Amino acid sequence: MYAIVKTGGKQYICIPGEKMTIDKIEGEPGNDIQLNDVLMTVDDNNKVEIGRPVLENAIVSAVITKQKKGKKIVVFKSKRRKGYRKKTGHRQLLTEITVKEITL
Image (cartoon, rainbow, N blue to C red):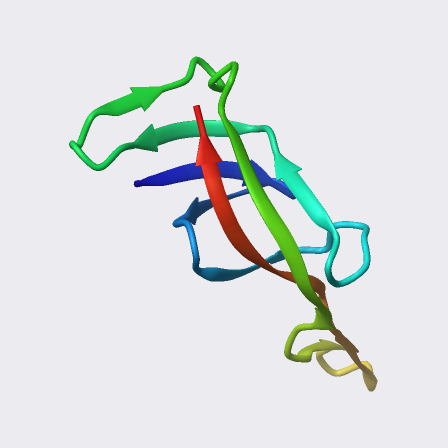
């Protein structure tokens, strides 16, 4: 069984028991969270349920395992023949969660 959820403007496949890294969600490691924007579910018999746009009573339960930062992305700006060069970086804040169960 798996579900597709939307959080942080992105869509993720959630499989019970697996760890996944998503955009930052407020909370401490060990806190339980619920992802309510479930777009689609597929059960063990390959029965597909698709929401329009979301499934009403579907919830993905998870637990926060870690708050972390992603890899650094280098942002380099320059203008040719002007001597303008600017180098900065960005590290996205991420949350690592472990999916506990999918309830319909």
